Length: 337
Image (cartoon, rainbow, N blue to C red):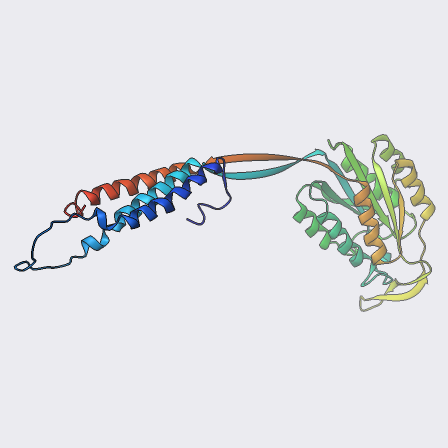
């Protein structure tokens, strides 16, 4: 019964004023209770065996059933209704985002904790979680590039793919910024999205690759893609891998951090994006938050209201009570009413 009245509204609540009649009827019934009993006057009860049965005591139950049925009818006339509100969001301007990530050996530098690559992955996952309505893909590059994940709306797939990124010696080492950008453009050029964005991250200088950065930038401009560039690494010296020891472990030394910021600024400016420098994890988080604010997805929300009438069960229950009272009155209580 509690679930039945959950989220109930009444279309005609003024009918509840009639409930004030019920206390008056109860008062009238109490005051006239003894007058309703049939009586026979005789001079003496001698010779009669007086036995008080239980049925006369239960006679007020009939009146109680009538009052309960009346209360249910009044409640039904107030038209109890449930209102179910459903909200649906529709993306009116979709954004496809290709995250292009440098996975060269220098990304293992420890100026960001625990290292640049791990810090980037953690921040990138948070970025993806904040973009529920957009499609996101992944391109990784070092001395060469490849698509790790085409743009998809499956955020769990994107997040798992991000978490699985590791430094891979099977990829030619180096920093092919042009190749990474060109691969991202190739993956987005046939996208039907109204807005296409590339987030290009590196911690070094373009030093290899078959496609130079300027050519890749021209391709991005041709297909109307906006590129946000991020230079990752502290200013000055950083503990970075410089060689692999005989046991296979990397040897780290303090070396100068070198990022081609001028190139990254040019790529961003010519494509309508912006360049950011992330010198620590906190700054990297701020950068991704700022990009998220710059690239907002327009979402239109529709509200649907569904009304369900709830008076019918009350009318049926009231009818059952009246019928039950009528049956008792002319069967079990027939000799007493």
